[in-house]
Image (cartoon, rainbow, N blue to C red):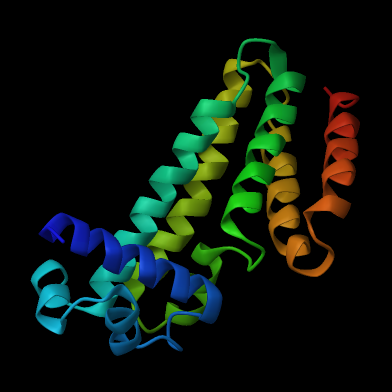
Length: 183
């Protein structure tokens, strides 16, 4: 395996383990064993577990926002945009699993322990809200819609853990239709 492949293997394995078990519950040794790399390889790429976590969160954010950009319908008005955003988020949840938001987990586990990781998590949520807000302004929609849409997305993420996406998809779209009436 080349160095970049080894780094990718470490990051993918770590992200999966962190998502399944939490950050503090997963040790570096477990990551290395499952990724099939030596400790020196990890420390060649990352100064610490926390540095690796920051990079994982930044890459995850990039993948999420890229998915949104690929799937958003910004050409047919606010209603089409809202529906496409909810569908894109559901697609993300379907692919990512049903274990909640890795950013919120990072914030919960690192608040007061590692301010950089906690800040990355808060900034991710703010970035999403700002993106929706900017898109809503561009679409000349009511400013309050961005927060309402964010609540729907966060609700989908948390309720997926309890009810599963199959039960939530139609409800989320019903909520989106109720927002249409308030434009």
